[in-house]
Image 1 (cartoon, one colour):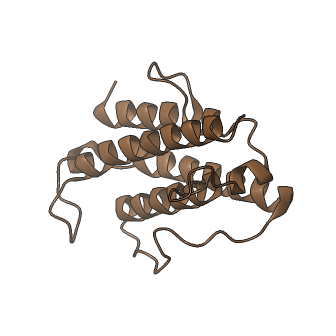
Image 2 (image 1 turned 90 degrees about the vertical axis):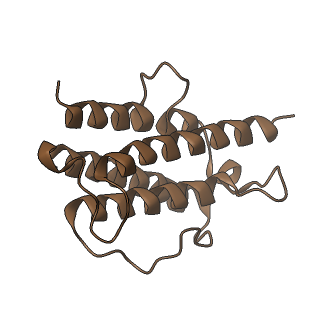
Length: 152
């Protein structure tokens, strides 16, 4: 298995599941309703809905870097928009689409470029891709804790 294929598999596990460490982002979001996603059981922490937007934006940013597209001006932690189940389902669907697009982009990255620096950055594609796996899993852990904090 190539190094690119291993990274894509790590991304898949972080996003969809079957990892030894615990729940993936998708698994952590199972059973979360719009009302639950909007709750703020820890006053100074982001709610699950905000975390979903943040993870989507960060995954999209990394995908853009991998494909050479320019970054957008969207805020790293945008305010939550919308309310209700349809808006929540749309937010989760957008996250899943962004994660699939990231994995697809990484799968097309030539192996020879993996250890090159990303244009305009002082780190390599490898460093960025390992970082996004860790980033997404960090937030999966946050989501899991927030789900527990809102339970009686």
